[in-house]
Length: 151
Image 1 (cartoon, rainbow, N blue to C red):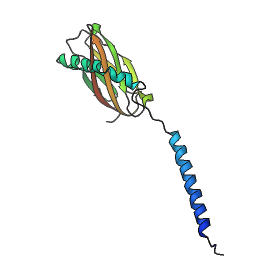
Image 2: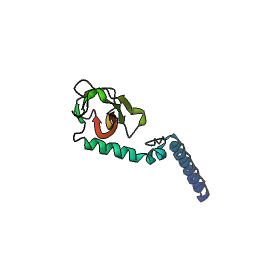
Image 3: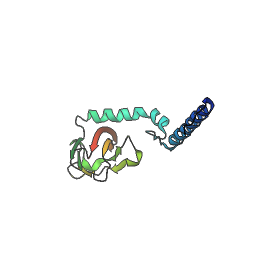
Image 4: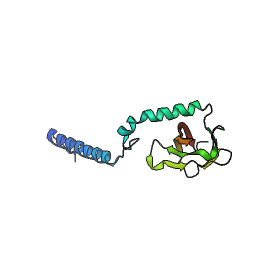
């Protein structure tokens, strides 16, 4: 038995399938999450000159923080000019693809100006390490790109 489709039936079927496709696409679009780099990006953009000044201060030290990755370990060697006991601040591991994987670690130097960080709890991928620290009432900022578990 052969079914004969009239043009009106074909049109109704096509429109019904098109509407189902559109409803499916709208549903999928509502399931997406879009994380902004910063929740309050506008006020932070106004304070960007402070970050520029901190980067200039770091470059004027003559020696930047040395970042050495060995497997799942990260060693930070602060400039010898700075006294380890006078250094304080924070290390922010920023994950561009998912803010849930960001990490904030305080600066805690040993007696020779080094800090060890285990990368084993970190998710595989790219991180931007923002080293924001102060020493002798001067603020510094240095950024490095780190690839975790990509060996």
